[in-house]
Length: 168
Length: 168
DNA sequence: GGGGATAACATGGGTTAGTATGGGATACAA
DNA sequence: TTGTATCCCATACTAACCCATGTTATCCCC
Image (cartoon, rainbow over all chains, first blue to last red; front, side, top):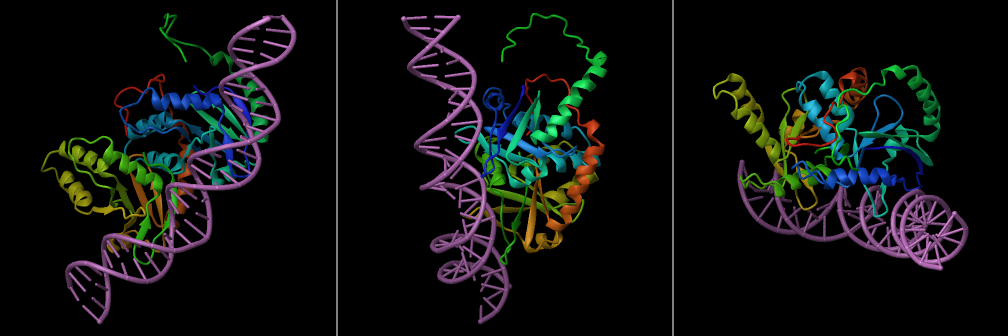
């Protein structure tokens, strides 16, 4: 599960250190629970958000989830095609180097207006990459909005099952 | 899984470099999970789309999936016969040369109005080949439509165990 | 609990290998 | 021959790999 927020450097060669937390999340996905589709890939997958000037990303498992979701839709549903083009076609596989860095293609950096520094935002199943300044404003806003909507934050079901090795 | 988009040159001899990502996807399919049908083929399979002036393609695994799908239909269902003729009969095996290129038959290039440059579009299980100009407009459009429909892109439940029959 | 040793992380830079692409030479068919 | 397809070689460019270093966090011993 992607958690936390951290700002790392984007160097002259377009490289970023992926936070160590995030790396262990995707490595676990890749090695541990192999879905039979023997596609192993040690890295992250990133694409430009269609909702703003930032990048979205996750591990290979996230993409498989999206694939499963889309393949349940009509093959020629316009929305399905749009999602396929906006996510699959625009995404890039970024694999880790020996130090846990990835090199971010220039067009992605441009899209999210990144230079010098980037902020990784853990969001559970996926994460986002923002220019630090752009994200700052939002973070404050989010807390306020969360407060206004706090009544909707109701945990349901799965009472208090002792729950085995929750682990991780 | 075919991901990303890239534009490569179509030279005077009708050759195109298949993106390295795509090559490793099909090679993996060919070597890794051999379904018993020991048909190994190091290359891609391409046919003219019946939905527009572009080409569709994938690895041998994709064609097997279509075969399985069609074989579940009534043998004399007109639609089945039409699919078989439109896909199987029109498709061409394009094998890689030493540099990872394929040579695209002229009639396919003509069908998709390709000259000089072509754009490969990764769409998960399959990919498309477009004339760069034709695709450009679509890509912008796709992002907008994806945004409008974003509420439909909801990953539900399925905690975080990738579970069984996951795709690919 | 304090303080030093050790490992992990983030970052910079140089070198190497892979990718994309052009062109020529060879084999085969019309 | 002429056209076409395949194979081989050469090259610019870029991404991957390797090594080094500062800084932070963790461990362990006293």
